[in-house]
Length: 215
Image 1 (cartoon, one colour):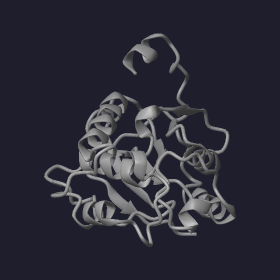
Image 2 (image 1 turned 135 degrees about the vertical axis):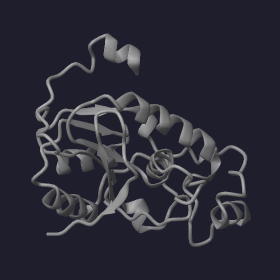
Image 3 (image 1 turned 180 degrees about the horizontal axis):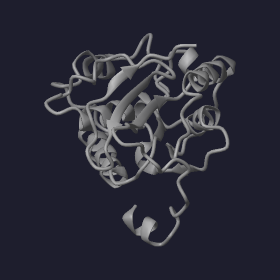
Image 4 (image 1 turned 45 degrees about the vertical axis):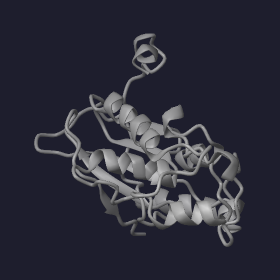
């Protein structure tokens, strides 16, 4: 990523770089809106399904709740549902797609019916911290590592930031930003278009908190 930045692919003028004395800049992390696979309780993973009507409505509600924020930078997973969500929440903003924000790779388990997931998935989902991911599935350590690299690369950016991603990838980001978490986010439910926000000094990033959208 640093090489891409040096090559100029990331060079653009931020739209909100003046921070008043004592003012806060923020990082907002959002899970994408609902898709038909979410609706059907399918383990979606990297399947590239768009938002359904409810997902579009959820993203529009999030956009309404964040309407007073002029995002200087918008980052998204490459999957269409995350990009759509970013476009709705930050209309007109330039979106930078980053592969490290993609959802966990569920390998052969992608497409699993979560109402009847089978013993391997049941065991893993019952205790993420102590049960390793089944063979062929990306490890949680890998998710934390790649999302942590992403966070390190955006630390020096100035201005409010939007990150549009997925449930497990989002938990990886939250694990990175919460000292001593030790896996506490893995069993936490993060719904479609849930938002977490963290203060950002231009280097240090605060512990994220659930950001309640009010309309």
